[in-house]
Amino acid sequence: MKHKYLVVAAFFGLLLAFAPEVMAGDPLNPSLPIEIWGMPFKQATVIWGFAAALIIFLACWLWAKNLCYDKPSRGQAFLEMLVDAFDTLTRDGFGTKRRGRIYLPMLATLFMFIWMSNMMGLLPIPSMDIGGETYIDYNGNEAYDPGEPFVDSNNNGKHDTGFIIPEPEEPTSNVSTTLSLALLFVLIIGHGSAIRYAGIAGYIKDYFSPGGLIGVVMMPLNVVGKLAEIISISFRLFGNIFGGAVIISVVSGLVYHFVLPTFLYGFFGVFVGTVQAFVFTMLALTYISSGAAEEPDEELEAA
Image 1 (cartoon, rainbow, N blue to C red):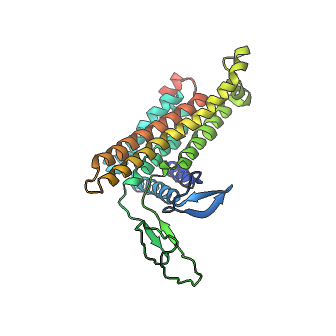
Image 2 (image 1 turned 30 degrees about the horizontal axis):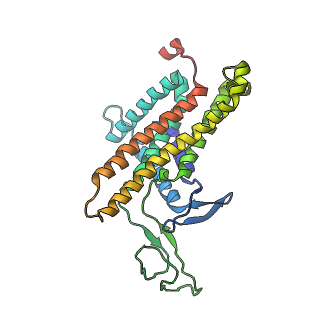
Image 3 (image 1 turned 90 degrees about the horizontal axis):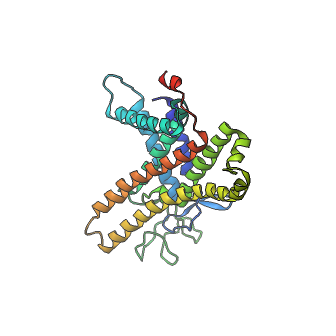
């Protein structure tokens, strides 16, 4: 396992963990005092997105730091199996092994980050308030509400909530994260690769497919189709993960936690999370390879 895989994992993981919030805020998971273009950062998305990226980095580093060719560890064997699987997928998708291995680190990292993000909601960690002023929680919602008595240690008449570490939730249940992934892999990498290999003229020409007068008529539809790729891939992942979290929350509330919905956690948390991570990665591979694939060279591939 080369060091570039670790670098790519850390870079994309940290980049996508800090996605700005574009949805309504949650009083239990407040926004950080950071804004980009007027959009705040949701605390839970930042914290657990960073945690997912950090877990990936540490796992890859521990499993790959002492490589053994004779008796590989279980971690090394798992990484080799993952890399080999994506090596085959990228080779088939891009036409040649050489072209596929250019995108192998990014797509394998994308899968690992989405999968780990989908698993964050399964962690049994309670929310924590670090440095906040103590108060009496009358309504039991684990959040301070105006009117509740508190210890005013700062003598400013306002309750200081401190830094809240919310309960684990899937960063991919936030549309800002999935939209950031789609913009990065479909728009920047996908369209950027098409321009790199086809040139500006070839890239623009593709919008006028199949050419002639029909191509002029089809151009607006082709543009809409490209935009639809970003929307569809991002909202597919967001909808499945967010919907699964809502179903688990509703069922848990209906049975008052007397019956642990183990099957639901296993189905929506592990099975659906794994499937959606793979589907998103394969769609990203398809969109990128549509403008970056090359014709197989049998002599080069055999070598």
